[in-house]
Length: 243
Image 1 (tube, rainbow, N blue to C red):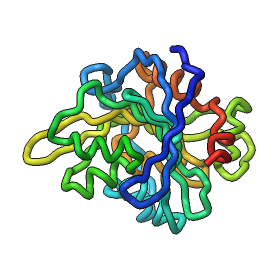
Image 2: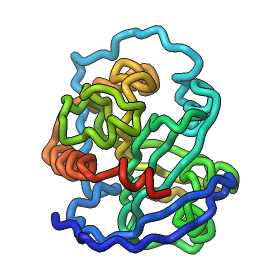
Image 3: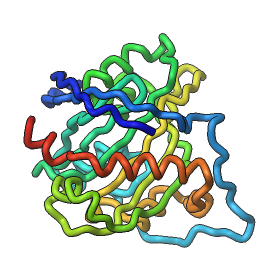
């Protein structure tokens, strides 16, 4: 995978009225994980999810944006990078502390049934909120739940997360499906990396009752994790300061 070092800056306004600055760049991506491109980890008969008491903020019915707003009193989104194939977004709380870094692999083809929603998302809209506001039902098909070890290579991200010390970060990789009128589409593969005070791996297990089936690092998961961890080395601090 090779990164283009030329960035073109553009400004958009998202559907929530939040000013968003988008940095467009080209990435050579050769590992799409949409439906049919990955072998999902299967749950063994002897595996059982532990019973974990979960609070209301960990309801599986909440969108990530809704969960951040409920837990921290506000929500906003900055699209840091965007191309036809990939988007990197900073989802933050009322104090502008990054609670989720979302890496989105778009599908190669956009069906006309959701082209309007896709355009709003390209312009900076929150993915879940945009589809929900337009009458789509959302389903998430899990690929992987896990943790990333601490790394000083991610100091810029740690700074956006409130200048925290290097620490492990939980990650959730899934395919984002949309459904309307008995039609279902795999819209994107999303890898979300979370602030440690927002969602831990234990929290992700609360949200996903079948979590034990998706803890295995398959070859496809390892490829995606390599891409994600490389993206986490980008200078998010400088981009945020330039807004």
